Amino acid sequence: MKNKIGVITSLCDDKPCFTELKRYKLDLCQLNSWGSWMWTDELAEKVKAEAKKEKIHITALWAGYCPPNDWNFTTGPLTLGLVPAAYRAQRTAELIKAADFAHKIGLPAIVTHVGFIPENAYDPLFQEVMVAVRRIARHLESLKMEFWFETGQETPTTLLRMIQAVGTSNLGINLDPANLILYGKGNPIDALDVFGKYVKNIHAKDGMYPTDPLKLGKEVKVGTGRVRFPEFVKRLDEIGFKGEYIIEREIHGEQQARDILETIEYLKKL
Image (cartoon, rainbow, N blue to C red; front, side, top):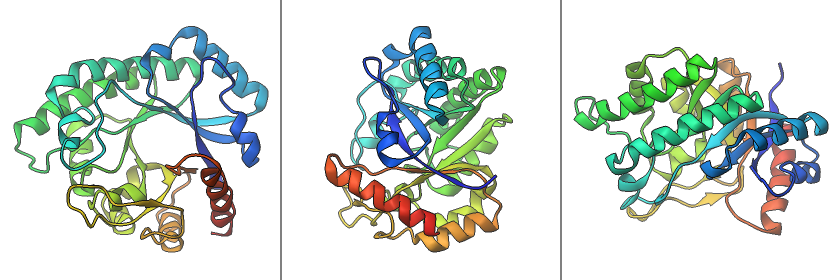
């Protein structure tokens, strides 16, 4: 199978989900939703029928969870993912609900940020997070689905340690190369030496390393940051990656659309 190019599109309950794909002349996407109240049987059937009618392939459901979610180095560790104990039970339940919703659509996996996983393997918090991840993974396993972790808040070694500690057969990585840079956690090309065999999907995104230790680095258009996409794509080919490149540009308006269109052409050349 050849690598394919798609975009992230939002789950909608009041309008079609895939309209913007037509603008980009794409038939591939990753479905994104931060609203667990939307994950109903009725909406699953609506999305499934719409995707079939429009001949859209959905790679996975990117599943968000209840707030707060602070994308920084200060309150981020206290609010993101399954790491904060105050939100872990609710978010575990939400991600299990996401798995059921995605299963009804016929998707192979859900994706999420686990959070700032402790780097110390003997930190009790690491074990607590592992138990929560394993519970979600086992539920997905019963549905014959996979659980993909989006990179960002943890080092590649820490993420590999979590995957091995959880120990189920259905774990993978949604590799966002820019996030490794934005969070200052690693070089995405070198990271493939650590966890390359687990990479299932790519977020085509670029960025700069943080220079303010309290704030993430800046996200930029693909090809203009520090990911070094020609080398990155070449290395993915070398390790046998067969998945999709899902474009993510975290700005809004017409500039976002222009950047996505340019990124599509850029990736085609690679």
